Image (cartoon, rainbow, N blue to C red; front, side, top):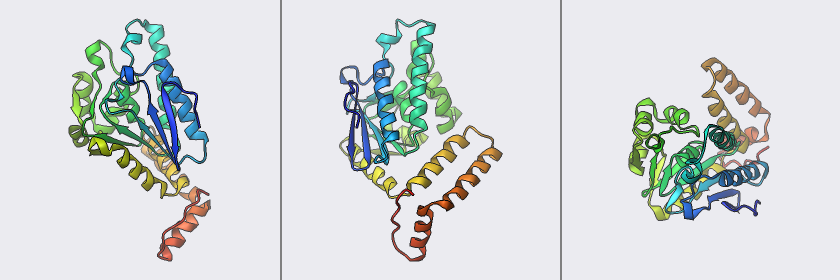
Length: 261
């Protein structure tokens, strides 16, 4: 458990790790210090074998309101490179985490906050959530993967609205666009994230890891290479105890007991 972080808190509940942004006075805006704390939290989640699912969450006012404008307003090009290098390093580690991840979004998820959620496998939004990439209104563009991940998720047309016009959308419209998977009342957000995490924990961990790897890496590969990777991962799982257990349970008409081996 990581306990010495200032801007991120980590709490383990069974096999669920709750990673909470903790900079409320700035609506959880992404400063370099917060990003480094998040990197430490993600590293702990990856290395601790008792963690099965990771949930990122903020508070009712903000998941993450965006980048820290106070910090960025004084930046020159070298400082901008340093900031985006750090941001992308942390986000890539989150995106590549070999365990399922859930973004539980309440309040503002703007700019870097929306980009952070795009690195997660699932996004659940409270009915109060407001999402967008308003960087264009500040004379810049998204610098944490927004121009790349958002069009891949929702298509070029909807992405143009958010990126070129800087428009913000509520949670219901975000669901219609496919930007979030589910919208729930604000007071139920944590319960819904927990319920989804619990469903994921019922699945075989090695197969989850393989499926996530195939999808994530396949998006950046040719179809031919992606199909080959899928075949290799599919066949490798036949060497696991979970595969034997899953198929035996199916034939015996009982619930499988997966061990992650």
